[in-house]
Image 1 (spheres, rainbow, N blue to C red):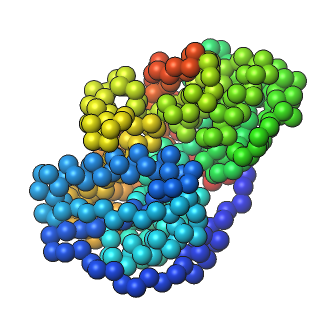
Image 2 (cartoon, rainbow, N blue to C red):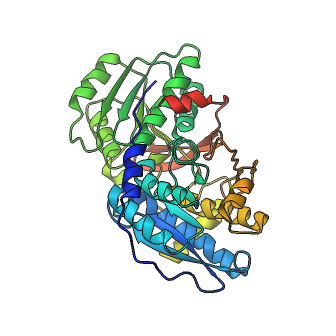
Length: 398
């Protein structure tokens, strides 16, 4: 298993030491401000922007129906600039507005300072699409959630799917060590693959997202002669890695998690084929769920273009789940809302049923769409759901 140390202490120190902002005006009567500590610049913007837009769409729909508990939801958005220290600062500014809930960046590493600040204040935080198991009760505290699925589950799911669909027997794992999500993704794959009859992981290697060359890793891949490559990475490094792998004449299937679902990066890997990834919902208009396709149309009409990443849907689901809990609790009080959220069992959402428990504040076993890129074009080709329940200790060991 891949193991890594925790940087929670560092984030906590940043949160405690963040600049103190002058008290901001509280919401007017009849309004409730919702905090957004999200990236509107820097590399994280590619993941946060769509999810933020979708969350605002959900809030607007609630407002159009009379608001939540009779109050209008008002977004307060602050740019974290994809910077850890800045994230802690804007979180304090938002908390000074007495927000009952804060949406934070899609990645655990970058969203954690804001989530920790919210936890310290007894407020709810929801990671827009973070897929690290620590994005929730285990890494932040009882008031923190993620609207996404945990990376370990994604890695295990794509391993099982590849085994059944094209007889994968000799995979090679290539891990981008830059962020925690990638570690969980490969950890899940490495947990599941050996449980499949006849499967042996024939090699493993690492790189960093900013590496301009992975020539040494490619040499080791060739020497291992795998029949599939599990690429645990994200943009832009993942596209660079794929270009180099294909340019080296390696044609075996490349597998990935949800971080690589989208249309915006495919042009940077011209003519790519044999790439398979996962998605919680399709941005292409070919989702088996008509409600998701209708959402894509509404999003395009509102913002002038369709979503570029499936993480967009998670912002909508985050507001859906929180608002349902507030409605059932009859209050915005964080502890009362948490009690309701922790009781959700197959709660209906845009993306299908969602479940939380006091120990699991992120989705650990949900169905995924399987997507394929062939000749530079992507489409949904299948669905997949993990057949096994991943033990808690596996999540904690990555």
